[in-house]
Image (cartoon, rainbow, N blue to C red; front, side, top):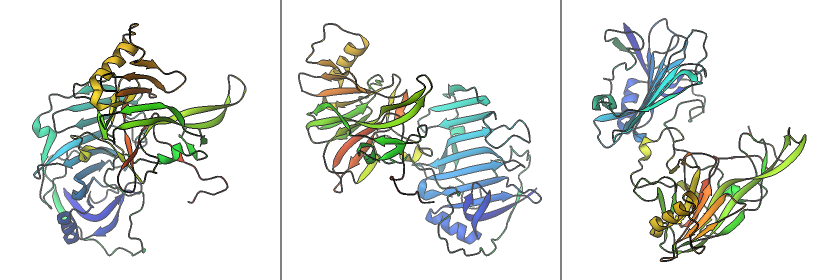
Length: 432
């Protein structure tokens, strides 16, 4: 079989066509410079490509997408270039097994298998035999090294990685098709529907969640209005190291996230938003106020930037699209704490909340009522404190650090129920 290779600057995921075709020479130059480009594998008489390879060495990334004759994506492989320049980690694999030619791409009932692998040997395989209606999870301790890693081919010598999926038993013959001159539409940027390398989760409108009058939506409630932040006491951090962690999850390595701050006492806040909805139970309109985020306010200076906090060994090159680092909880609980007194503070948390110890000194343990903050513990030896708060579920929660224009920490925020979206100001029309 003869397979035609074409190169382009980008791949339109929606239209399934290359954007700005380029010559093999230009593709080679982009490859050497680390710039993004794509390779399209096609055969005569078939409208959909067999495979598309997406390359961006500056982002440590190579992706493969395979399509069936109907143009549906059947296979996806994301690979990462880490510290060894000669091999690629098979970071993420997904396979869709459509049960009929009529089944739509990514149909919720489509059986699928996904696999995630990490360089330290950990892995996870998820089977969904009935699509999203049922899932089977499992770790993968037995993955061989050659299954986890792939040797990095040089430019022009890549194999057709989806050959087996297409039933090809022999190595195909490749024929390069030179790009025709593309019409210049005056645009230097690829359309929004074009592929781009995976990006970590973005901070979104965090500062606005603490600004009264701002209109937001959580995707479920069409309109919510931010109200005045609610102050829930203060937190003492005499060590100058603020911990943000799941107090119910102790892996022996201390708190998940630690943020250096000036030693001191800082205000604890809840960001809240008010919304009105029709309550079927009461048969009338009901107004309620929900907490959207919690914050340690380090400074009154506004945040010029927000960044996702991470541990020293968190490697952003491993993140999938909208991936996050953060603290993990299996008890829907997070906390802010003085990292210098982490162990005694955590011990008091366990004695008070989990063991319900009736003999706890009220100077070291305090329940907080009518708040998303649950309790406060205090280490009498150092004066360091811990304040636990509820989240809306288990899992991993990112920690957002706000910095001033000169780079100083002004606030540390945890969104308790995901990122909200800004709505246009009243009296204005959203741009399109």
